[in-house]
Image 1 (cartoon, helix red, strand yellow):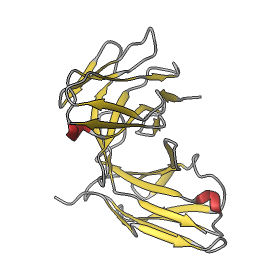
Image 2 (image 1 turned 180 degrees about the vertical axis):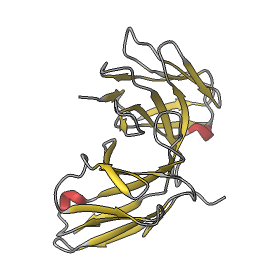
Image 3 (image 1 turned 180 degrees about the horizontal axis):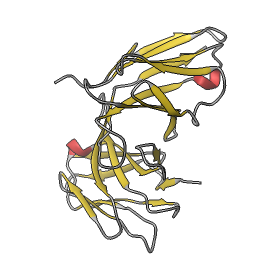
Image 4 (image 1 turned 90 degrees about the horizontal axis):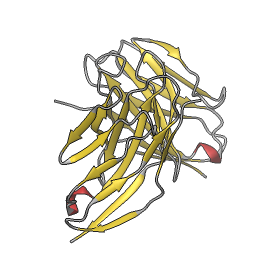
Length: 113
Length: 115
């Protein structure tokens, strides 16, 4: 079936450090891939997405590239800020014609000043 | 404008009781989704509505779970005879249409605790 696997958390970094959160997906079909973010006390919101192989999604300094050969969609940011502290979820569209999403388990990121 | 709202924000109930969770989607959004997030796990899909019909109920864990949507707006998720394993955050999302082109907007969730 469809699944998404994220790196284990939590992740703790100092401000301005480089961030990578790994995400891999099962290779069923040609899914669209997403990163969602949940800031403390707020609802889940879309961070970025990529709809086909080799696409790069980007937003707020975050980037992720759809790698079909490694079935990966790793999230990266060159210089994190304290305000990036949140829970990050990788997700894929579930192989249907509508928007049923399959999520990874989430990675808690804490950035210290 | 108003986002997706859910009520109640928190619900504590005794095992065996029935609960109703409500979702008010963004006005004009035809697609509505329910997800569940258990502690330490990712979100699990429960059910999808297009308009007032539910083409995909495949994620509902058991026949104790049901959902309806009326007026192409409000949706209610009902859990009968609650069990402790039902404890989770229940999230609702809506989108203008269905598919990857349409961003899903999530509500703040209802935290359900079954004692």
